[in-house]
Length: 70
Image (cartoon, rainbow, N blue to C red; front, side):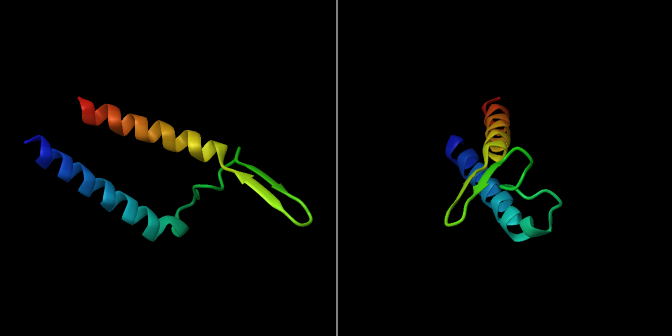
């Protein structure tokens, strides 16, 4: 029973990730380019740290894990 539930969960995650990759460019909000993400561009180099995106993904994954544990 547990293994079947695990396989279903992994399948749903794969479908969601596949849809996000397929339609990600068409969404009005692009992950990795949210307000609050840090980007520093110099003459010969650039540094980019998506802090807001990391926080958002962390909250979403925590919510999903909390729901699955119930």
